[in-house]
Structure formats: C-alpha cells, structure tokens
Amino acid sequence: MAKNIELKAKTVIARSPDQESAYLDGEIVMMNVENGNYYNFNEVGTRIWELIEKNPLTIEEIAEKIFEEFEVTREVSLEDTIKFSKKIYEWGLIKVQ
Image (cartoon, helix red, strand yellow):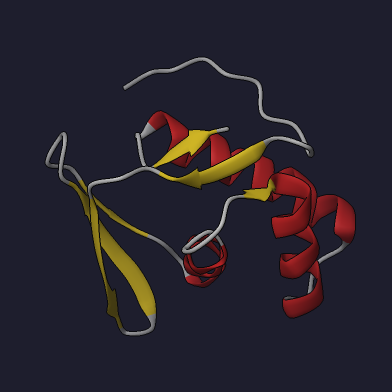
C-alpha cells in the first residue's frame, strides 16, 4: 500500500479502524484486517501505538512523549516519530486527520 504523503510535526494522526492487536512480550503484534498483513512493533513503536489508542495526536505531541520517556533528543524523537508514522500510514494502520 504505497501512499505518498508528507507528514510534519503538526500532522494529526489516529488509528485506522479494523486493526487487531495484542501484546507479546511487552510489544504490540497486530494484523491489518483489510489486507491480512501482520506487523510487530518494538518498544518505541508500541508506545506510539498506545498514545494514539483513544485520541488523535499531532506527531509533535507524540514525539514529545517519546522524548520524555526514552533516552533520545527532541530532534531525534521528532525525526524518528515522523519516519515511523509514515511507515505505519503506508501500511494502512493509521489515518491522517
């Protein structure tokens, strides 16, 4: 599902519907019901997924939480959150609002 989109700090993202997920050894494993693909996230990806569980957030808000909770600079947190968000958007796991 190759979708070209430019995500920025102020972009608001939310989970797409029809995702089945579970924890396995403290990390998220999920299936996209629409395409049948399975995905697993590392600790940071799992935390991002948890942050957008109930409410849409800007990428900047997510990156700030990652900065606060993990040993990373603000700049790296924002850059990596944008990259991860683009990846899970392309996989159809999130939507942009």
